[in-house]
Image 1: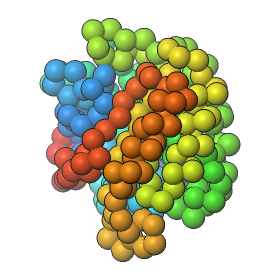
Image 2: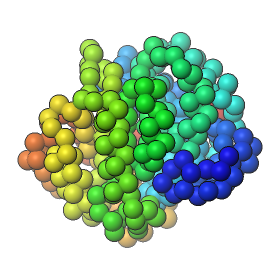
Image 3: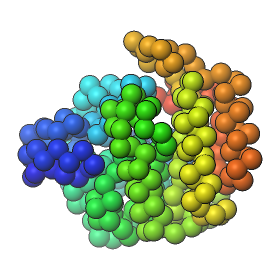
Image 4: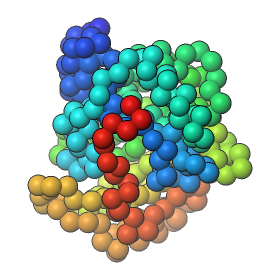
Length: 290
């Protein structure tokens, strides 16, 4: 296929076994692990964990990516849409609280084929970097119950410097509005998120103004009770990190972000302890479950 699934609009040919584009992936899925994941937000984990499938490749090139071995180095195992469906079924049988599809956007066609037309017994979660095409998202309507996008940046400069996507702020905002159009206000049952949008934002060292701009947009765009917001402190410097990215977020930075979030009236969501930058958040990718 000629691929224009994401905002990069590479226009390159990607076939089941021919890779291309910024994501550097074929059209059929490549995945690095499937597991019951305990380290998502509590409303996604349930008793046994979120049924996470970690896909390889990504349409962003974030300098701070904690999953770089699969997102940028391409580690993973090629599978068919049929095998992907079997993986979904296996995770449900294991007691997964949801199907947590991690960075699935460049495999949209295969994911939709694997999901089929029926409603799954647990919510399908589209866990993405926020850099999404509205046109592609519209194809997911009624097939995805929970959207879990990052809103990494509301300012152009860090978006360009750290992810090579100067258009990220406006692109991600448009995508999140489409997600909300599809799901409406979030809905919880027994502490578990059944439908809705949960926006994540990772606080980056030295980028408090960007965090404040993200919080401003969320607070100005959505009323209380419409979306959930997760303010994350788990930034971990990656090998070779330079400049601001070479250190962790300080206690003062994260507390300032928390206070700003509260002052803006965002109460529906999650914060983290600053010590949450643990290795558990980055699973070992050894093809388990694939």
